[in-house]
Amino acid sequence: MRLAITSGEPAGIGPDLCLRLAEQSWQDELVVLCDQKLLAARAKEMGVEVSFRRYDANEPVRASQRGVLTVCDIQTRADVITGVLNPINSDYVIALLDRAIAGCGSGEFAAMVTAPLHKGVINEAGRAFTGHTEYLAEQTATPLVVMMLAGDTPHGLLRVALATTHLPLSAVSAAITADTLTAVLRILDHDLRTKFGLAAPRILVAGLNPHAGEGGHMGREEIDTIIPTLERLRTEGMNLIGPLPADTLFTPRVLPQGDAVLAMYHDQGLAPLKYATFGQGINITLGLPIIRTSVDHGTALDLAGRRLDGAEPVADPGSLYAAVTLAAQLARKQTQ
Ligand SMILES: NC(=O)c1ccc[n+]([C@@H]2O[C@H](COP(=O)([O-])OP(=O)(O)OC[C@H]3O[C@@H](n4cnc5c(N)ncnc54)[C@H](O)[C@@H]3O)[C@@H](O)[C@H]2O)c1
Ligand SMILES: N[C@H](C(=O)O)[C@H](O)COP(=O)(O)O
Image 1: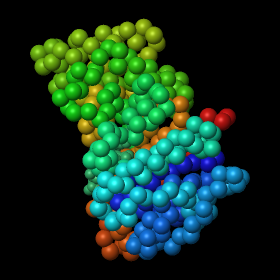
Image 2: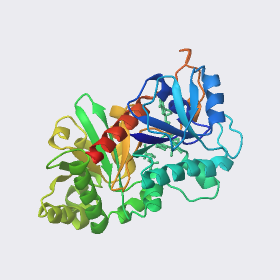
Image 3: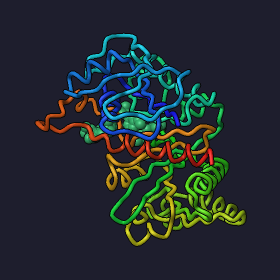
Image 4: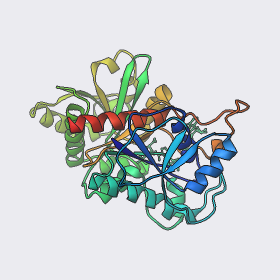
């Protein structure tokens, strides 16, 4: 298998983590999409010993050797200062994504894995951009996709999908309609079956309001939208539990009752997930025609370029390793 790894924001930890993929060998060919000059400079800064092999799409797919990084060289638009954002390089970040999406679409790559980018600096460069998830949906002409993050906790694997993604909190209620909730739950149920092999996935659905609305006394979204939608989808055979009060949903007694949680908005679901799994979890876009996984963290500008000599904390590559491993598993499953 050949997997594309986009290195993300050049001033952040994406290039550092990509370099650290070469700390082990991989069964698959990992092709890092990055400016090779930037990787060489960052390796020097971090004290990493690695050699680079230029990617050639016409060569046969090969396993990745420890100590060697295969690089699809795409040049930054301006010199990179580690830890310092530069809007001029936003086009470069987008070019990495476009190259990976095109390669996944043509079959050149079996999957894409994304290192973190910085949404703010891309907007500052004049491009409306809310995240990989939404960009991938747009670029693959997919009307709706679902963001799901997952990671191991002491109580078992936790999967959290989101009914809404990157939007202001003030816009969340209006975004939760019967139609969108229905579409999100259909994608989640379908992909839990097909991608994760769950024959009858049990989905714990969070309410939106405190105490799931307290019978309508603390908000009506549960009564007006969520409950009727869940009832309708249950008649189609979906195993849906809820709406449950979100504050006690993420507790060891409730979580084992489901295979995944559907949270109504970003921080409702991701705050408990990251509390339990940060640095080791993965992000996957469900409902896409291509396979895309990602890390569970952002650009961590404060950690970029740190030397690996143990003198100070460095970015943990665990989540990128987990995202690559999952992408390869899903790609393999798809070809079986
Ligand atoms: N997949 C992605 O592209 C992705 C995911 C999350 C956030 N972001 C973006 O990243 C930017 C910065 O976001 P933020 O500051 O909210 O979150 P962040 O994850 O970059 O940083 C939050 C904290 O976690 C630490 N941290 C992050 N990754 C780490 C790692 N691998 N190992 C050890 N510590 C780590 C940071 O040093 C910081 O203290 C924003 O633009 C955000 O939108 C991108
Ligand atoms: N919501 C994600 C998180 O908090 O980890 C993150 O912002 C990444 O989103 P995209 O994969 O859509 O860029």
